[in-house]
Amino acid sequence: MNATKDQHRADQIFAEALDRPPSSRAAFIESTCGEDEQLREEVTEMLAHYACAEDALTKTRTTHRISGRPEIEQVDIRTDTGRTVGTCRLDGKLPDDGLFERWGTKRQGEGPAAVLSLARQRLSLDDARQVGLHAEMLLRLDHPGLPQVLEAGTVDLGRGSEAFFLVERIDGEPIADSPATSTGDLRRRIEHLVPLCEALQELHFHGLFHGRLTPSRIITQDKGEWRLSDPGLLASIARAIPDSAAAEKLRDYGGAPERPVMSPLSLDGRVDVFDLGRLLNSWIEGHDGSLAIELRAIANRATAHDRQERYRSAGEFGDHLKSILTPSTSDGDLDNSFAGLTSMAATILIAVTAAAAFALGVALDGWLF
Image 1: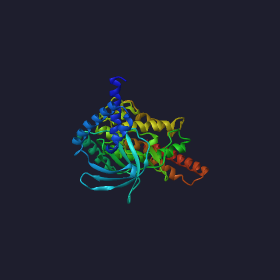
Image 2: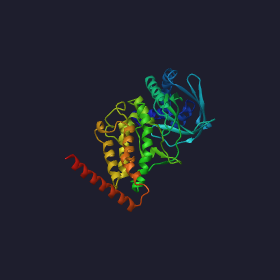
Image 3: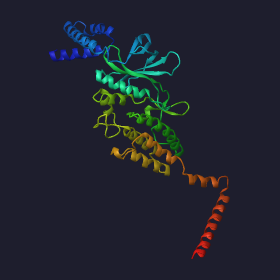
Image 4: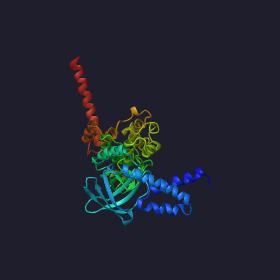
């Protein structure tokens, strides 16, 4: 192998070693380098230089401490001031979320089952401060449609400061993204979507947005209510660190046309509105009734290429959905007036009313003129 390939191999092993706890790095390097003494020395020297820099940088830049190890199935979370957040028993590693390492947890004592997510994004001091600010906003979220953020901040587990989130675990089935099977089915889906828009509005009210609003992230639970599976963690990291891997993933995710060209700092709730409009369009495909026509107009505005033409938030989008589900007062009064009448009786009553109105009009015409 030439020198370039040797250096590339050393860089690769060094990067993989950093993703391991400090206590296991030496054994990893030993087994990976094998009998190649030169490669081992190169990686070991790189790691020694990094350890000095890591020690200097990580002493004061994290908000929390997490002790314990996944292999003993328990971690203790404390703030940097010493307040104990709680002990989590790890309940198995969850599928990788693209940016986050995730574990299911069971907290000792009372409290919901939670997901511990670690963002594989090494943070500078300024980055850590920005993540801390966003963590505070996430902790203030309070809506039944959103999973509760139980704890959030930055932590150093031996590979540099990174963001972590302890979030209520939402179990259930993803909602359908296929066309509605009937007008009744379409109406029921919209009735569920309205309160979900109110949950998203809680994010938008705090200047946050979700960023990955797909059917797979909207969960229907046993009682039939819809909830988001996470409160937009990727978008929170992307806004805190605009040049991070999270920001790149957010831009590459798809959806609203402005994603690839705008900074996460410039994106807002209209990105979520676009995704809601796409979901609405998939539901009404093949439907031509009056309800579908009204919904199509809402979906077209939500997915407008010019973001200035869209609804500005999920709350505004939800209000328009609610308006087409709620009959006007005048229509309701008319329906109530004829409630309980047979079809024939209602027809006769309408005819009599119309005749009386006509006669009154003729009489008034003669009296006035």
